[in-house]
Image (cartoon, rainbow, N blue to C red):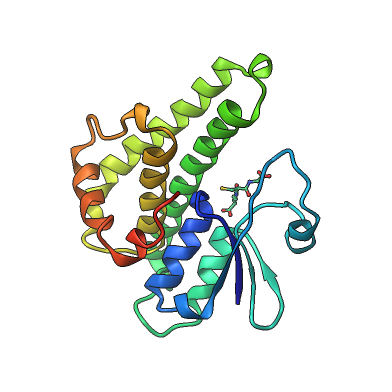
Length: 202
Ligand SMILES: N[C@@H](CCC(=O)N[C@@H](CS)C(=O)NCC(=O)O)C(=O)O
């Protein structure tokens, strides 16, 4: 399998962590693929019409996107502890946590593009503030929910680790740790997992 990824992308990191947690790391060739919301990339567009990473080319030559779909696919390829609970309330709790983490990441990646890719005269401070409200609202929900995770490290927790890693990487001055002691404690342990350590953004 081939994974279009890059070392800075938090969505690609979800897949890279999931692959390692599922014991599939050795079956996936990671292809470093730079992306930009404003630059054309015909090769990537042939695989993913949204021209985004991650995109996975399966062993059968099928292309899968986005991160949620790829992670769920990888979860069908192993017999270990599943990253997605099969059914019932636990499944929907995991899917909701994944959606929360993905939503925070969407807002954070948009802030990154706004401050890094968009030319200064076109930037819009209120728009960034709107995205930040989603990010900080999402972090508050993570802080409230973290005590219920009880040692689990499934798709929702993978997403949460990618959120916190991305905020440290791109927005260290936002200081997500202040006022979120339970999340800080959880992340200290999560960050020591080999899958999380091996995929640190750079
Ligand atoms: N919902 C998608 C989001 C993927 C995404 O936004 N990827 C970013 C990199 S972190 C990207 O490819 N951006 C290029 C663009 O927006 O054109 C997923 O979960 O995979």
